[in-house]
Image (cartoon, rainbow, N blue to C red; front, side, top):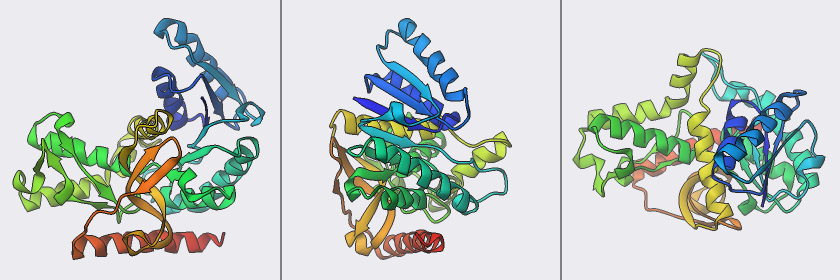
Length: 307
């Protein structure tokens, strides 16, 4: 198993480190345009493997020759959000970066599965899919896992319970119109609608939607990377180990949930072939309306790129 991580910034480097720690590949390749950065970080990670007893080779590079025949390519490249910047502000700059990275990676690894982490997530996943020419099951975006993790964290904090007992679902685009689903969110199987007031749930839903910018505002000069990298690696592990996990991911829809020709977060089954099934759950009228709006926002952004 060989995995390439494109982008050696905070998200990419932390993703690579988590992949090494979990020994999800024999070789991890870290790519970045800044000379010396992937080489230095990659060597540092490799030098930690004897201590941690993780027999994984780590290679840092500025080119793509070393990425040849990768099984999975994780794209984290792009500029990060700054305070006052929306995900849409990133779109034009990051679309050019993701397009270039995808073209280079696919040329060397035509049989790979692509996981996109770059923002704005759903639009960048569409760019990678369109540029790669891959089947839809081999291109996906990391968003729902992260958004659900944030929702789970806030629920656990509110109720003072273990995060292990909290499950949550968040659908839709990775942005202000994402759709957390309280009806499908539980604590030890108990719906949170029986444990929290509607006002509290609404507050937690809003905090989940604002989860990324909350961290950006704290950091001032960067954005989240611990939770995003953990989420991307969870998806990677499901594919590498053919675990058939049901996880919310940005997937290309062709009629599911009444939506077509767009990437949006929905529950999917992840296995060795990538997205092996899109799981359709029953939504009430309000939830479907919210999902439609979220998908429309993504489609409008995609249209602006004229790809």
